Image (tube, rainbow, N blue to C red; front, side, top):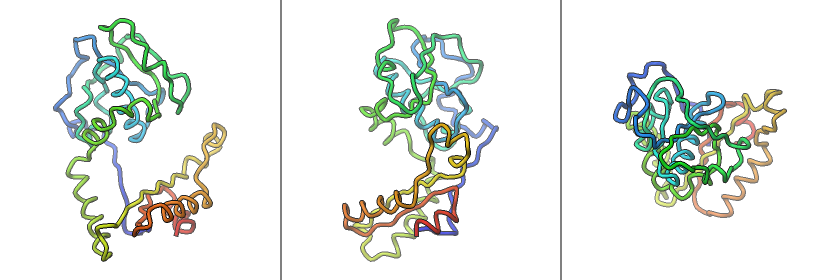
Length: 232
């Protein structure tokens, strides 16, 4: 269901005083037992979430700790405990690059030869296979919104539930419709393709047949008018 009065707003800030300081150090840690995650181009919150989760999985396999620069947005919105943060220039550590974007690279799970050496991983690491076995920790414990963001969301969902008699069996399904930059020529040339109305219709029908309980679809989109006309 689309609620015109509801929107999710993510603001960025250059004021790092708002970030959590529990794990922040002003310079790279001395022990050489870290994996520093670095994206080819600066991404947004979604890119950072994948980078944290995947680097955490790789670091656990190699007995390392995750190192991220402290201006990442995730430290503003989440209570992150799985990464050490710092500011400064990128250290001159050995670097390993993912072979392809958005494709699991198994070589990143078995590259460490010197067990005391810190390394840099260069890429977006957008595959669940990097962190699947550690998802209970990184997703269910670390990636929880801070209360100032979580509380309004909880209140919004309680308002929706109050409209239904069968709250106990009510199931929410999130729908992310991203068009905007995906419709540009550059995005189309590299293979990005926004979900079509047919795809969305099939997805809705699939869950209606699978779950057979009261469903509420929460649509988050950068193209409201298109979503309202095609997902109604």
